[in-house]
Image 1 (cartoon, helix red, strand yellow):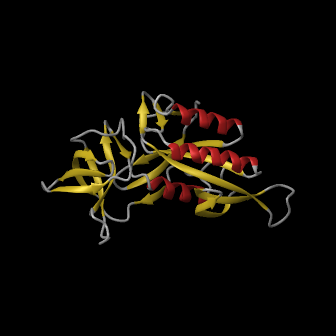
Image 2 (cartoon, rainbow, N blue to C red):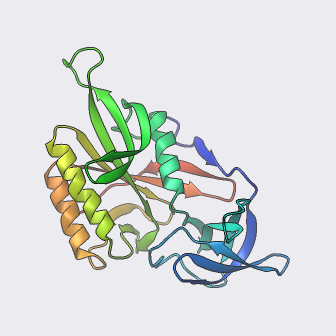
Image 3 (cartoon, rainbow, N blue to C red):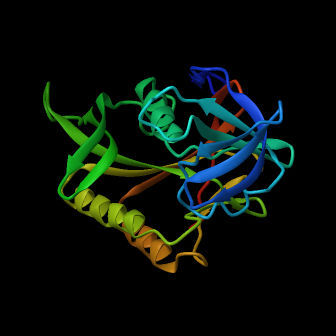
Length: 245
């Protein structure tokens, strides 16, 4: 496995600027290098605690969709010496590519990988199947994977979530039912910053999520954490992070 392989290059050249302010959750004003002030779409609906600093360098991706009110999407911000990826749609793309080529330990054997698959009243980011020994040719066990973007840090810990998330708890509860039905259930956290070395739930921010994660793990839901290195050129698989519940 090549941990340095790049699996997401930005399709368009990013545009550099500095953050003026983030507001209304989904908007951010940015001053570009030529002095122009633009408004960018922020996909991250959380508080963005520990990755929000006015005046910090940012990179935006241009958008040509005439239906969009904003012409830019905010991709990353420089905090300290490293870039933090704040676009919450990127981890889903990354996870799909990484799992497809067998880069994520424990998920190497999945086939027929699909995105956005519904089960009961939830829609999961990924679904694949694995051959179970003794099950016969053509028979496989399903595996549902929910992907979350992680940007919050405290000390050397990556934490999730950065705000109370009822939707996140719902996914965990549904993953428990997936597991109880005989399939595999996986929570895959993608940490888009390099200044952390371990992952934990943010119990002080959302105690109910922490308890739901404990219960999910007790029922056999797997927790996998991947650290990604973010740069203006690409986002790369870096390493697996240990989990401390």
